[in-house]
Length: 214
Image 1 (cartoon, one colour):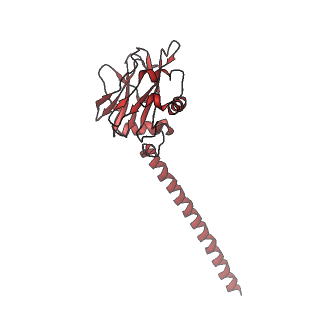
Image 2 (tube, rainbow, N blue to C red):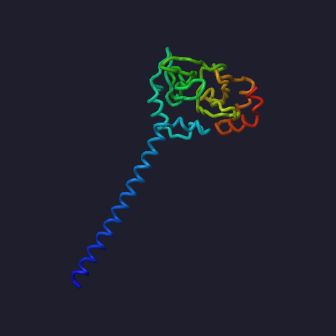
Image 3 (tube, rainbow, N blue to C red):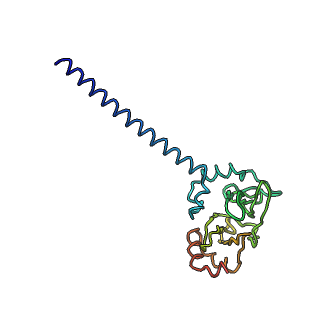
């Protein structure tokens, strides 16, 4: 009888130990899966564009890491300084594997003034956006990338202001993706100057596609 009790106690101990180990292993596997998912999000933020999302859903740290990985943070332009906060990797037609690069006058970086933006690839300018604001006090405040008219081409919204140090006035632009380059309409953009947020501009453009997408 004593031997039987001893055997039962040993069996119960082994069962509990096995259950504990299995639970610990399952938790470890779940943690590893979560870490793998996080790494995919960090390493492949541009994948969100394939799902119709805006790159701005990712944190600033993630965007900075990807910009660095694609060489976007080391771009040079004669007489100007790179605005890293408004420089992003882009991986959609017609400029796959490129950078949306914003530069400003080197003597004015708080805030950056006299800003201009371009598409760079392999460290060189390959496209200059048309009809940019020429004001010496122009500042790019935000950039968004999204298909605004449902043609499966990513368009670009640029929120900007003039006179940031002395009562700023907004000067916003939408650049239409033509599949070969980007086009903008000055008269249409003037209708955006009362907006201060990406979401406001996006909603207005989608409700007035005939103005921005002739």
